Image 1 (cartoon, rainbow over the protein chains, first blue to last red):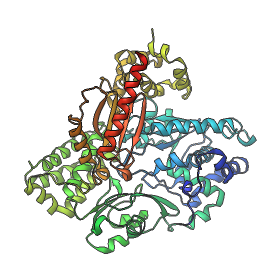
Image 2 (tube, each protein chain N blue to C red):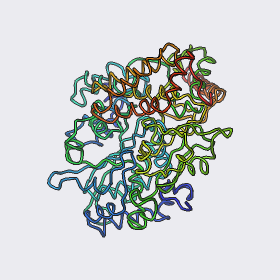
Image 3 (cartoon, helix red, strand yellow):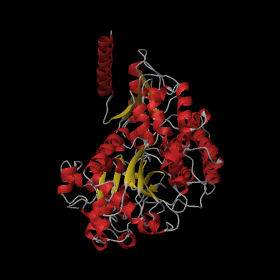
Image 4 (tube, rainbow over the protein chains, first blue to last red):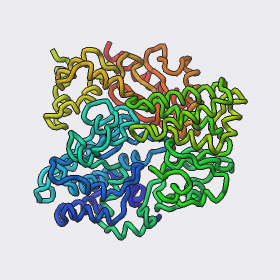
Length: 426
Length: 173
């Protein structure tokens, strides 16, 4: 793309400074929305744009907003900045380098659902980012762009940051709400969904950083402009976070529907030493693994539907590449270890299951496993699937099930070798 | 006497102002960061102070400390060096980086250097996969990222920190 929508700071130096952001049309969209549009019109425009949530689930944003009841008040908006999925680092770049566009997006979302108070829930590790955001928020309030009677209207908004403290589960929206309410971050039973019973029991919209950052350009240039990017069912642009065995890992903002081949070879510079791609995890550690045993797989467009059609999910588009030197049993042991550590412990299948899977994979890595452990691992994964309170348990089995199904020989080899494989880069 | 309130009256007030008065329990996590700022862990007294401010039980506050990984209930090194060893980082050599760093420091993962300054730990994802090996440093109430690391770079940085701490001590004596 010749022009960025989300990573505009790469073209406009110092976009994180208010005067620079204002000089490049900053807060014009928020002003237009708040002074000229009815909240329902904003919701409809976002619905028409086809914007889907960029946190992973891909639910249509405007539709999500429209679920809030108009007879229960106050409404809240919460920005999910708890980015913790291995392979994901897109929100961090926006937060660090283009914070005003996020804040403007948060203003637009808040106006659309008539919330007067919004929170940005950041993972605790983003301590420095939170301090910087606090400064930006204070700057906006001082400039009269945030606070009471925005742009001379009756609409008022306060934005606050809130730091988590190192728990992946808090990216799950109901666990995030529990955490924001000062409790252990464990998911709530649903329904009721946050749109009806959210923060402090009130109707709440929770949107990802990237989702919100899309809003100012959509409202400024219109839904049809936004639909000119991407595909019919997955319109717009997306930040693809590329990591693993690639020459140029990083964030790449591209239209939805760009192929894996273009991302990995054109933008990512290919695989070190000309090796071949063995597998792709298109949505971070929680992905169903895509085996690249057929070169045509690389030509799959990266949109929600096409990636689902080859047995995985686009999720937050955090594409991890493993090359031909990677033993997939080792790779699976890494994902299992992550989910075992991050299981919140609320539901038994996830708490016990991830613990058990981790024991088996650690045994494999320590050279103490037997052949039947491969089937045992698959069996435990199958027992977890479909029985958990939230998606974390489901995520924990994705790589296990698809890894064993497609790379069984790697697991058997690992059991026979009785030594831990060495990761590339080591 | 509420020591936290006495030591940080302005900060406590600012934190409480972020949340609706009837939901002040939301302030428990920021107050824990405040309590941890000086010693690098949450002392027993702070649990009681926070509980009193927020009208919770000390046990409820302690459960928050236990659940979240960035809070500590025991003293350790002044600086926690936390290396991400999750899948994308491991594909870029993070496991070996951590192993070598520990070797050079003469400690095992999870242990503290003999001078009591650095505790080295493996942590889960830091959202910096493209710049691995990466670690964060938690200490003095702050968290700072160090990306694209080598063992040599990290050791050199640690030496700078030691210098800073020595200078601080000299200034105090």
